[in-house]
Length: 312
Image 1: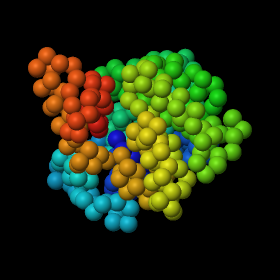
Image 2 (image 1 turned 180 degrees about the vertical axis):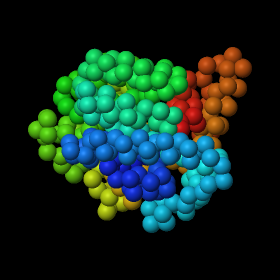
Image 3 (image 1 turned 30 degrees about the vertical axis):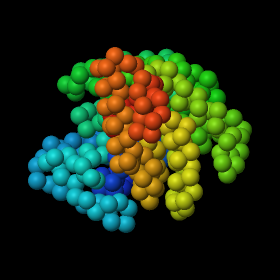
Image 4 (image 1 turned 90 degrees about the vertical axis):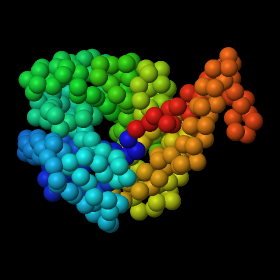
């Protein structure tokens, strides 16, 4: 996944439009975007949206066209589930509230149209274990395989960052994500232009995911959607740190994020060539080989090439 677009859960119109703007995945927000008085109505709206999205994917012959102002004008076929240069229709995640309120959120949204839950303000594995038990019961009731609903914990405090290695190994965890606005406030830091103040935090998230053997973390949101060059610079920096994909707050950010996280054909060709050379070397009884430029490479370099070829 290259992009995760946040959509407020209390706006049925924005939810419907979000399916058409070209994001790889949506994060429907039941937390910060929804005031306390609107939580119940938002849950109902999101549940209806998920049911409709699941039905649309299962139906045949329906087509949606992305808004040309926000994304590529590529038809989305509900018959094939394909969109945007052959990518699947956006996978839908829901950001749930922390604690018991999140369990109520989960009860409203778990079903076949849901990819998983982004769990706000996760600080302990115990929180995830409690949610795991709730989800298991909901999945059985919905006729889903137990464990089908994945979770992405949001690290939004000092305690969460320090617990990241344990959280990354928690039940159902697919990857981690940073909630940097809350995190910066908790730490008392003020971000400069290069955002180096949170460099160590970002590296901690990457390390925790790698050590746990799960997918790399999703890059945090940027509030900048009017300056594509600045967004490109920050997204490239996050990619170099080890993040894969980025959360977005506006459809205008999608083209830049997709550009950064879509491997160029020369990169893919070089990776395929390197894997082929290494496999030939193994057949010849050697664990190392030379790349197209005559440089010696080993399994670690080839592993990176394979990762590039298999990333979603």
